[in-house]
Structures are given as C-alpha cells and as structure tokens.
Length: 383
Length: 82
Image 1 (cartoon, chains in turn green, brown):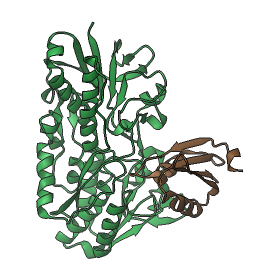
Image 2 (cartoon, one colour):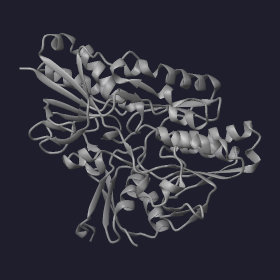
Image 3 (cartoon, one colour):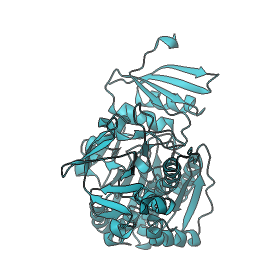
Image 4 (tube, chains in turn purple, blue):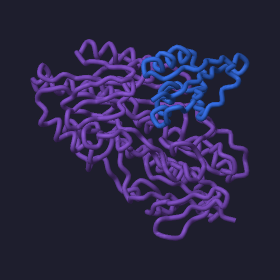
C-alpha cells in the first residue's frame, strides 16, 4: 500500500521538507511505495527577508520570487496549486477549494503566518509595514518622500515573523537618513511591547546601547491598541499616546483558520511537541507542523523552518521504513541582524539558550546578502 | 486561596525563551474581554517580576503568583480590566 505524505505550504519549510523527503525516500518513491504531494495556493514561493531591503530601495520584489516547480523535484513530488479549505484529522483528509480532496497518512502543515493589521483600529489606514510585498513597496515610496518628522517603528504584533527585523529597520533607517544628510531632521522612535527592546535579553542589551549611541528613542511596555490616522496619534493599552509623522508597524500576525477549525491549536498556531513537532491535539495522528505555523518557543524565522523540516523529514522517513523515529528538534535558530546599511551581526541559539551578539562587521553584512542570494539553494535542499 | 482561581484562559509558556512569556500574555490580554481571568504558566523566573510590572502599568489586576516547586514553574493569575 502506498504511504501518502502531504505537505501544505510551499514556503521555506515546505520546499526544504519536500526535497529532504525525496532525497531520503528516492527508492521508495520510485517503487511506488511512497507518494508525496505539496499543496500551495500560488505557483510561486516568496522569500520574505528581501522585503526589508525593498523598503530602502535596495532590492526589487522580483528578486523575492521563484516558481515552486523550479525548487522541487516535480518527477517525485506532486505539486498541487490549490487552497486547502478544511482538514479532517479523523478521516485523514483535506478538502480543496477547487473541489474534491486528498487523503493522507502523514501530513505536514507549513502554512506560515498571516498579517492581521485590521486587528488594530486605524492601523491599515495609518501605518506602513514591510512584512508583505505590497506593504514593502508602499513603504519604499513613503520613505523616499520622507525628509523630516517623526518616524516611529512600532512592534505591535506578538508573535511576529523575523524578530530581528524591527531592530534592523531602525538601525538601517538611521544610517540611510545619515547617508542622505537628513538625519538631523528625522526623529526615530522604536517601541516594543515588553520591558526591554527585544524578546531576547542579549539582543535587547545590544540594541539598547546602539539606540542610545545613534540617537534612536526607545519606548518599552508599549502596546498600541488604536491608531488615529487623522491626527497621527498612537494610543496604547498602557494608556499612553505617541504622535508620529510616519508609522512603520509590525502588524499583528495570525496563524491559519484551517488549524483552529481542525482543533489543532489556538489562534491558528498548531500546538506541537517542541522536539518532535508532532501535533498534540487528540486524534491528530500523523500530523506535524513546521515553520511559523508551529507553536514552539523560538523565533518565527526561516532558519527555524529549515531545521524543523530536516527533523520532520527524518521522522517521516523512519516511519515509512517501519522504524521508531528518533530525530528531534532542539530549537536551533540562526539570524543575521543588520546594524546599519553596511554592517551586520549574527546570533545562533537553541531552546533556553541566551545567544551572544557578535561585534557587527562588514563581512557579516556581506554574509547576510550572500546568504539571501544563495537562499534558493536552501529551498532546493542543497544548502 | 490561589487553588480556587479558575482561569478562563491558560497560557502555557513553559520553556519559552523568545519572544517570552510576557509577550504571550500581552497577545492574549489584547484579545480578551474585560473581566477575563488569565493564567500564565512560565518557567522563566524573571516573569515573576516582569509580568506584575506590566500588569500594573497597563492597569490590570494581579490576582496571585503561585510557585509550583516540584514541577519547576510559576502560575501568574491576572484579570483584565476595562
């Protein structure tokens, strides 16, 4: 009998997983013992880290997109461009928007995170962001015309994708306005929901020192609950108000409605065992989650999706072979962090670790850009 | 006393390092109605200071902090106000 493995989501996690599985199970796939299907609602993958550079006019959106068919072995993986509308973990079946459905024996949810700016009244009208393609282009145009005033970067959504990006944005903005001789006319403020500048203490300490050195204001315990686009004022849960001229927000994020409706987790994030990445909901046998949609205590970052995909590929391959799966995920996360327009640093950590923030350098900045260029090798399972 | 608190929402942040238990709590409080009682479970010792500090600043009510010695975690109970 053929073992049916279905992956929902063709982002970093989904494509790395498909490639790891085709590598690990080549013989079984060619013998017809295993069938792999990857479902994605668009034919392209978008590499989101490019958006940060789009906002500063340093990259174009076209550099962020590739056809998924170019990233996976379509001789061994069925690529289905469709939207999954329902998941029945009891019947082990997915319903598709275009009609019909597909059954699975092992299912991996890699549906990512979605933006939900509408959760904060006034944010859609009053704020910009760089967490999506249109938003990044609109912000690029707004920044290009912004020559004086108060630029506020506000981290509103928690959890959010790429936890380093907000810090990177203000450090890059500072350098960018200095390069253009405008910094004296632009006040920059960074706001964060908790009592420090970042969720990770060592990154918070590092960023706080840099903010002070570079004249970037820091507001903590700052949780916007409404934006007035007319008066350009942010109102917070803590009862504070802050005026802005240009607001760049990290919008609230949401998981997948599919996940909530299937009873796999709250707020659309899949409740999983943090080491095996298997869904913990009762009756959800054979369901895994990787990437942003998996509710694990580390960053929603591409590197996490990448390493989780490796763990899940090994666990699935073990099960296919009738072995007991032993591969586990230890929370490994790697982030490059830009600290200006031509310098960057780098952190690496696992569950419970406190990363060391290295001295920023041009070399690490080039390393980040080089990785972004070579990312497509990662998606193809080669790097 | 604390054993009697029946939370409407339980947030299990045990083992969380980033973005941190407090951020998990803030996210839930944002979506909760006034009067909702939330329990935050955390293994991060700093939460026992950070969470009460934020709760006070945001004007919510800290109901209790219970240390579960054997299991190695804290339960922090708060009630969302208007």
